[in-house]
Image (cartoon, rainbow, N blue to C red):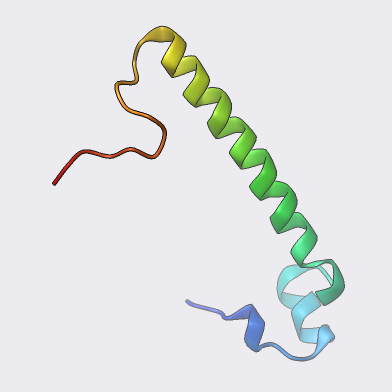
Length: 63
């Protein structure tokens, strides 16, 4: 089931699906994104200290 929230135009339906008003819908996504990045950075730093990482963050293998 794929629901495109951007296609919902009235606030009543948007609130019914998400529990948030359209005005508040973007704020949680930004907050969760920032927290996720902080957690990923912490995991990366710990793996560098322990010697698990051989490549820089985001650096994949050559194809």
